[in-house]
Length: 463
Image 1 (tube, rainbow, N blue to C red):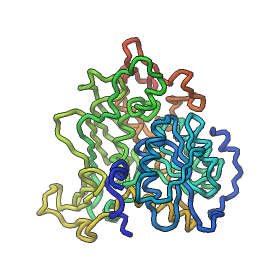
Image 2 (image 1 turned 180 degrees about the vertical axis):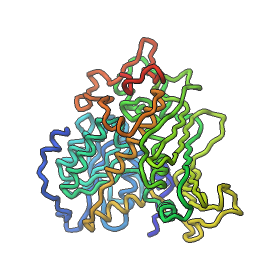
Image 3 (image 1 turned 60 degrees about the vertical axis):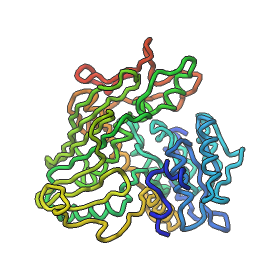
């Protein structure tokens, strides 16, 4: 079946229409059998993190057509989110009997992820879709249990967790685990075709790349004061886009796709970044994000990647990535994630009369990459093919954090600086409890520490 016919433009829209590092490093390096015990060869799925993104990922998993897939466990720290996710998936007529999550396999709490993974067999798949701060911790346990993994982006938010994830992915490879990362644009067939043409020299040498994600206010990243009596840690996890420790903030979650696209088009990762940004519209917000970010990345050969993000109402909107070469130019993606509408143009002006190639000239429609990434992962599991996207996912996350840190400190930040930096946003992550303190605390006015470029320069901030 053409995946473009069964998968809509986002995971959220899909639903509308249809242990510790120490534990991981102690795991034996024997490979995991990918032949399941069940006579029907069913791959079982557990969902850890039952928000909109995780629920959508589960829906994509259940929509894979190359063999039986079944959801058998859900875990979240919030009972209401677990219940909502279960209802959305269980009531979807497209999935029939594929949702078999009985009450005894619905787990709530900070240790719920362990119970959900314990419900699987080695070689099954766990979806890690909690706020990214928890990614390394949950990945550690998945490796210990011998599970294949799909993890949402970003996968890290600072240097220490990035180094940890690099180590963990080597452990996963030793056990022959298949791991997908939710940078779904890398699975877009139109982008793939254009990237191949760029790397083959069809537009000449790449001179510059421009990427934009400029839209109106993003509610999930603009956080108001916590209501009286609200548990501090619960408030921050529920609104994780507004807190640097939990998500890396708006840059890490929203700009990573454009940044990753730009690096993909270049075929390299930048070595440094400088950036500016500020708060212009957040008088009633208490979160840690800026309203605008403008990042200039530099690659080793001097090529530039310019990334602009803005969440201010009443302004010009753009959500696209453009590539300029010595011979021609290209639109890598336009108007969001799906469809990409990838094209090549004569010269540097993106006018219809100058268009010389378009993916749509070859294929009339684009399969939805949200679905294709799951088709690719499950196929790799069934065919026992090498498949591990973590290293690339960590590098994309790290480069994104490099740009964020440059904007927040007002300094030029290098890749080596962010990778080897010692500042970890949530060093006590494994011990978090609703009975204990949150990684960041509000002041007497209910506001959280915000970046102060030029003033806070010797660490990333602010706890």
